Picture 1: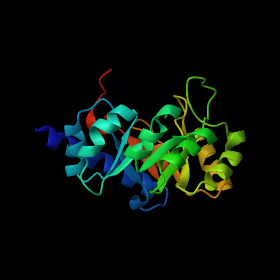
Picture 2 (picture 1 turned 120 degrees about the vertical axis):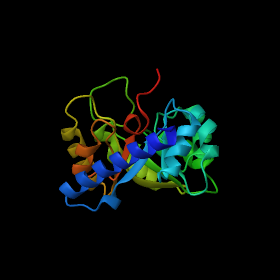
Picture 3 (picture 1 turned 90 degrees about the vertical axis):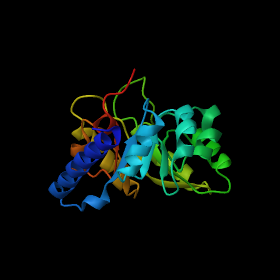
Picture 4 (picture 1 turned 180 degrees about the vertical axis):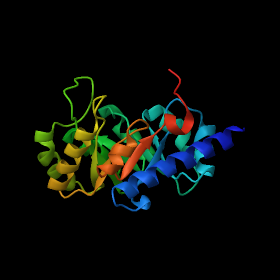
Length: 219
C-alpha cells in the first residue's frame, strides 16, 4: 500500500466515524469540519490528505506552518492550533486563515494589527482544567475577552477551542458548549484522535485529528 492509499484509507475511516457520531447526536455529518493535524509529519502527508479530500489543515508550531502551508493548494484552509507567543503573532496572522488559540487581549490586539488587510478568523482557547502548563483563558475571564475581541476590526471571532485534561473529557466538552452558548458563539473546536466522537456528540463543529489520519507522531 502506498502512503497515499494509507492516508486515504485512514481518512475514509475517520470520516465514517465522524458521520456516525454526528448521526447519534441528531446532526448532519457536514456540520463537522475535519482539521488534519500534520505536526511532525512531512509535507507529503499534508498533500496526501489533500488528495483524499481534506481541506482544513492544522499546525501546532509557527515554524512548521511556515514550512508546509505554502505548499497547500488553493482552497485549503490553514489553522494555527498551538500556542502563539506574542512575538510570533505577526507571523501567525500572515500564514494562517484561522488562529484557534487566542487566550489574551494582548495577543488578540497583536493579531488584529498584523491582520490589517484581511479578516482573520479566531477562536478563544479556554483552560478547562487546572493545568499550569496549558494555555487558555479562565472561564471566569471569558466574557471580557469575547467583548474585547469583538471590538477589533480585523478579527472574526468564530467560537471556542479547548484541550481538556486527559481522561474523561466529555464533561469538559459539555462545559465548553455551555460557555459558547452563553456568549452566542456557534463554533466549537474540540476533540482529537482519541475523543473526537464524544466531542461531536457534545456539539463540536471542528475536530483536530492527527494520529488517526497519519499514524503516531515522531517525538
